[in-house]
Amino acid sequence: MPMLDVYIPEGALPADTERELLGRLTDILLRAEGADPANPQARSIAWAFVHRPAVFVAGAPAEEPRYRVVASVPEGQLDDRRREALVAEITRAILDAEKGPGAHTALDALRVWVFPQEVPEGQWGGGGHIYRLADIAGFVLGDAEAGARYAAGRLAGTAAAGRA
Image (tube, rainbow, N blue to C red; front, side, top):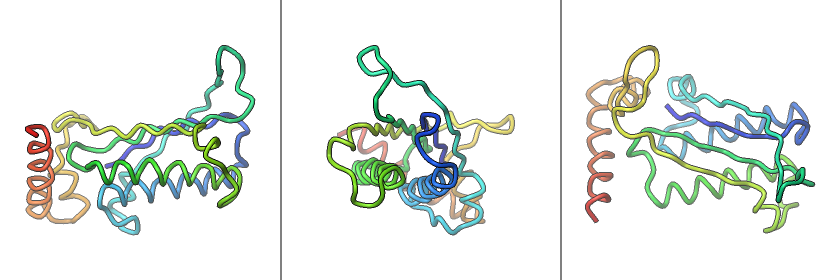
Protein backbone atom coordinates (compact mmCIF):
# COMPACT_ATOMS: atom_id res chain seq x y z
CA MET A 1 0.00 0.00 0.00
CA PRO A 2 2.55 2.56 -1.07
CA MET A 3 1.77 6.26 -0.97
CA LEU A 4 3.64 8.98 -2.81
CA ASP A 5 3.58 12.66 -1.99
CA VAL A 6 5.13 14.28 -5.04
CA TYR A 7 5.95 17.98 -4.90
CA ILE A 8 6.18 19.43 -8.41
CA PRO A 9 6.19 23.20 -8.92
CA GLU A 10 3.42 24.53 -11.17
CA GLY A 11 4.49 24.48 -14.81
CA ALA A 12 7.70 22.50 -14.23
CA LEU A 13 6.52 19.71 -16.53
CA PRO A 14 3.95 19.47 -19.33
CA ALA A 15 0.73 17.76 -18.12
CA ASP A 16 1.16 14.62 -20.23
CA THR A 17 4.79 14.26 -19.14
CA GLU A 18 3.73 14.64 -15.51
CA ARG A 19 1.07 11.92 -15.86
CA GLU A 20 3.66 9.56 -17.37
CA LEU A 21 6.08 10.41 -14.58
CA LEU A 22 3.52 9.62 -11.88
CA GLY A 23 2.92 6.22 -13.48
CA ARG A 24 6.67 5.58 -13.58
CA LEU A 25 7.10 6.64 -9.95
CA THR A 26 4.29 4.30 -8.93
CA ASP A 27 6.00 1.40 -10.73
CA ILE A 28 9.33 2.25 -9.07
CA LEU A 29 7.80 2.31 -5.59
CA LEU A 30 5.88 -0.94 -6.13
CA ARG A 31 9.08 -2.68 -7.29
CA ALA A 32 10.98 -1.27 -4.28
CA GLU A 33 8.39 -2.89 -2.05
CA GLY A 34 8.84 -6.17 -3.86
CA ALA A 35 5.46 -6.00 -5.61
CA ASP A 36 4.73 -6.59 -9.28
CA PRO A 37 3.75 -3.24 -10.86
CA ALA A 38 1.46 -5.15 -13.25
CA ASN A 39 -0.56 -6.63 -10.35
CA PRO A 40 -3.96 -4.85 -10.42
CA GLN A 41 -4.46 -5.43 -6.67
CA ALA A 42 -1.13 -3.75 -5.87
CA ARG A 43 -1.84 -0.87 -8.27
CA SER A 44 -5.29 -0.27 -6.76
CA ILE A 45 -3.75 0.69 -3.42
CA ALA A 46 -0.79 2.66 -4.80
CA TRP A 47 -1.73 6.32 -4.59
CA ALA A 48 0.14 9.47 -5.52
CA PHE A 49 -0.73 12.91 -4.22
CA VAL A 50 0.63 15.85 -6.22
CA HIS A 51 1.48 19.04 -4.39
CA ARG A 52 2.22 22.40 -6.06
CA PRO A 53 4.77 24.21 -3.90
CA ALA A 54 6.27 27.63 -4.32
CA VAL A 55 9.96 26.88 -3.82
CA PHE A 56 12.50 29.34 -2.48
CA VAL A 57 16.25 28.89 -2.29
CA ALA A 58 18.13 31.12 0.16
CA GLY A 59 14.99 33.23 0.54
CA ALA A 60 14.45 33.89 -3.18
CA PRO A 61 12.27 32.08 -5.73
CA ALA A 62 14.12 29.08 -7.19
CA GLU A 63 15.53 29.70 -10.65
CA GLU A 64 15.07 26.04 -11.61
CA PRO A 65 12.38 23.62 -10.44
CA ARG A 66 12.99 21.72 -7.21
CA TYR A 67 11.26 18.40 -6.60
CA ARG A 68 10.47 16.57 -3.38
CA VAL A 69 9.10 13.04 -3.09
CA VAL A 70 7.97 11.38 0.13
CA ALA A 71 7.59 7.66 -0.55
CA SER A 72 5.70 5.94 2.28
CA VAL A 73 5.46 2.18 2.69
CA PRO A 74 4.53 -0.13 5.56
CA GLU A 75 7.33 -1.07 7.94
CA GLY A 76 9.46 -3.95 6.74
CA GLN A 77 9.27 -3.16 3.04
CA LEU A 78 12.59 -1.34 2.60
CA ASP A 79 16.09 -2.41 3.45
CA ASP A 80 19.18 -0.31 2.74
CA ARG A 81 19.59 -1.72 -0.80
CA ARG A 82 15.93 -1.13 -1.72
CA ARG A 83 15.98 2.36 -0.16
CA GLU A 84 19.11 3.39 -2.09
CA ALA A 85 17.73 2.04 -5.37
CA LEU A 86 14.41 3.80 -4.75
CA VAL A 87 16.09 7.18 -4.27
CA ALA A 88 18.28 6.75 -7.36
CA GLU A 89 15.42 5.57 -9.59
CA ILE A 90 13.00 8.30 -8.50
CA THR A 91 15.67 10.97 -9.04
CA ARG A 92 16.47 9.62 -12.50
CA ALA A 93 12.77 9.37 -13.45
CA ILE A 94 12.09 12.98 -12.49
CA LEU A 95 15.12 14.33 -14.33
CA ASP A 96 14.36 12.17 -17.38
CA ALA A 97 10.85 13.66 -17.41
CA GLU A 98 12.22 17.17 -17.09
CA LYS A 99 15.19 17.10 -19.46
CA GLY A 100 15.09 13.77 -21.30
CA PRO A 101 16.97 10.54 -20.57
CA GLY A 102 20.65 11.18 -19.98
CA ALA A 103 20.37 14.94 -20.51
CA HIS A 104 20.86 15.82 -16.86
CA THR A 105 23.93 16.38 -14.71
CA ALA A 106 24.98 15.54 -11.17
CA LEU A 107 24.07 19.13 -10.21
CA ASP A 108 20.57 18.61 -11.59
CA ALA A 109 20.21 15.59 -9.30
CA LEU A 110 20.67 17.90 -6.29
CA ARG A 111 17.35 19.56 -7.20
CA VAL A 112 15.52 16.30 -6.41
CA TRP A 113 15.08 15.18 -2.81
CA VAL A 114 13.55 11.82 -1.98
CA PHE A 115 12.46 10.79 1.50
CA PRO A 116 11.65 7.08 1.77
CA GLN A 117 9.78 6.38 4.97
CA GLU A 118 8.37 3.29 6.55
CA VAL A 119 5.17 3.71 8.49
CA PRO A 120 5.50 1.73 11.75
CA GLU A 121 3.57 -1.52 11.97
CA GLY A 122 0.09 -0.87 13.30
CA GLN A 123 0.13 2.80 12.18
CA TRP A 124 -1.27 2.47 8.63
CA GLY A 125 -4.89 3.55 8.75
CA GLY A 126 -7.53 3.67 6.06
CA GLY A 127 -11.25 3.21 5.74
CA GLY A 128 -11.62 3.64 9.47
CA HIS A 129 -9.33 0.70 10.26
CA ILE A 130 -5.70 -0.08 11.00
CA TYR A 131 -4.04 -2.27 8.38
CA ARG A 132 -0.96 -4.26 9.21
CA LEU A 133 1.58 -5.47 6.68
CA ALA A 134 0.00 -8.96 6.77
CA ASP A 135 -3.39 -7.45 5.83
CA ILE A 136 -1.92 -5.45 2.96
CA ALA A 137 0.22 -8.31 1.64
CA GLY A 138 -2.74 -10.69 1.92
CA PHE A 139 -4.85 -8.33 -0.18
CA VAL A 140 -2.16 -7.94 -2.85
CA LEU A 141 -1.40 -11.67 -2.95
CA GLY A 142 -5.05 -12.69 -2.75
CA ASP A 143 -4.19 -15.04 0.12
CA ALA A 144 -4.34 -14.02 3.79
CA GLU A 145 -2.06 -16.86 4.93
CA ALA A 146 0.58 -16.02 2.32
CA GLY A 147 0.31 -12.38 3.40
CA ALA A 148 0.88 -13.36 7.03
CA ARG A 149 3.95 -15.42 6.11
CA TYR A 150 5.35 -12.62 3.97
CA ALA A 151 4.82 -10.03 6.72
CA ALA A 152 6.37 -12.24 9.39
CA GLY A 153 9.51 -12.60 7.29
CA ARG A 154 9.80 -8.91 6.41
CA LEU A 155 9.10 -7.72 9.96
CA ALA A 156 11.52 -10.25 11.44
CA GLY A 157 14.21 -8.63 9.28
CA THR A 158 13.23 -5.20 10.60
CA ALA A 159 13.40 -6.41 14.20
CA ALA A 160 16.83 -7.97 13.58
CA ALA A 161 18.13 -4.74 12.02
CA GLY A 162 16.93 -2.81 15.07
CA ARG A 163 18.95 -5.10 17.35
CA ALA A 164 22.15 -4.72 15.28
